[in-house]
Amino acid sequence: MLVDFKVTNFKSFKDTNEFSMEKGKYLRKYKNNILTFDKIKLLKLAILFGGNANGKTNLLDALRMLRFLVLTPTTSENKALPTNTFGYNSDDTKLSVSFIKGRKYFEYELVYDQAKFQFEKLKVNNSVIFERRGKEFITLPKQLGGLQKKKKKN
Image (cartoon, rainbow, N blue to C red; front, side, top):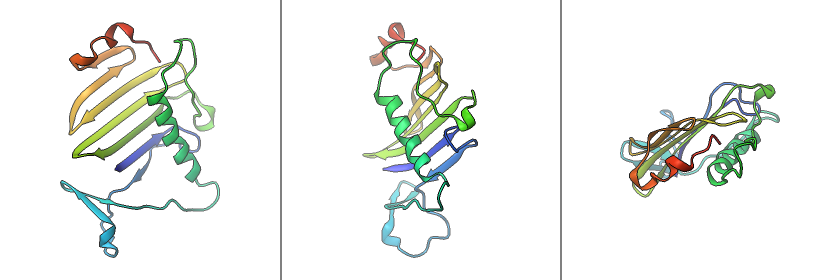
């Protein structure tokens, strides 16, 4: 279940914007729309709405971009990563997501530009499982030790 999603420097989002499924402090009605995980209260359902050109589609595009970057390996270090930055600037894009699967709380963060992944980190239940800056692994589980030799910038 999605907890939150943050996006920076992607399409219409110059600064960090967050979509959160956490219950707000003023929500008093519809208590059957709330799930509790440890101390986190989450909404079972949320609706994106707003005026035209306010970023609803861009938020979904950012989620799709994160999915694409995680699930689609690059074929070459020379191939550019897909980007769509705010105003076509050259700053890094940052995407992060927190979610719950089973009884585990996952946090994943990715910072990248057209040429390479600048930073990537995965945490499970607040423990860092995987972390890298550029091509350098800061934390890598033993099971993934073979990645050390096969790493590429993108």
